[in-house]
Length: 333
Image (cartoon, rainbow, N blue to C red; front, top):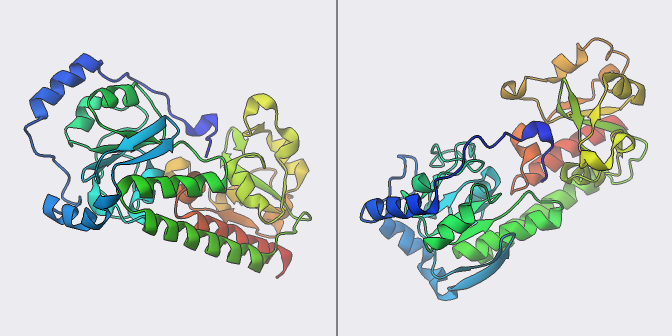
């Protein structure tokens, strides 16, 4: 899912040069990996869990960074993306994950480290002796540096569509030896999403909404974005669509006057958590000048789970369910 400027954090330092990384590998090559206490079970346990899938390797997948070949079932996976982490555990590859980045927080008990997907440190990554690395972007020469070391890297960027999100889950399943469970995961997601849409209905052009990504300034998401397409499953009218410009990339900055004048009947908050400024329904309702907005009058302000609203993984059905409940309530179903 493409993110608006306000949700991106600048890259503050480059990764070490390839020569430095090669030197680091020489030092750590003989060392065992160092997963946290909440990490996976022993290597023997991991090997046992992947024996059945071993026959399907080597496998080649078409990732965003091109064709990537994984020669054997990976037993030391490093994830540098919260969505990829959720995907890995959803398809059954959790026991193979030895380290995840500092922003990965689901499911509980994942081996969180200080690794960063935005500013990857190759020396820190190779200390976990990975045989597969999954990330959402190729920052700081991540792919080139690890490829020189013989470590396959899958770049799975923000999904633009639901089908793209499904494809990534299936791709990660194939690359880790869990193709069948990945297919089951995707099938289950599709079933849950279809059921939620059917229950709430998909023809609600009479219901307008404002999707808030941040406040002061107010950034929103249009129907062309990933989350906008999710909301469009219900046929809702997005007030940000008329304000969008090509340069905004689907994430226009709206003025308070514009939002108030648009009179959205639903307000979805994806900046609901305290760490993002705490823009809760109560905070929104108390904003000066907002008392006249229809969504405020009818208490149709929905505080979404921030992580579910900014990721494109296996918890998408939960996000759709939240929207569905709001639509049913607003439409009187």
